[in-house]
Length: 75
Image (cartoon, rainbow, N blue to C red; front, side):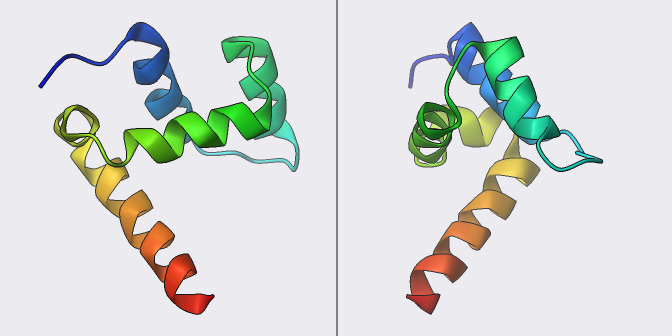
C-alpha cells in the first residue's frame, strides 16, 4: 500500500466536515481544492476502494461505503 497524497487527504477531510447551508460544500470544494464538484466526487469514490483511505479515516470511509452500497442496492 502506498500513502495518500495531500490532495487525497484534503478530500477526506473536507468530506468529514459538517455543512450548515446548502451549497457550502460545493463552494468549499471549488475554493479549497480547486476542483469541480463532479471531479471531487470521482476522486472520493475512488478513495473509498483504497486501503490507505480506510486506514487514514476508518469511520468516515466505512460510513461512505455503506451509503454507496445502499444507493447501488436501491437502483
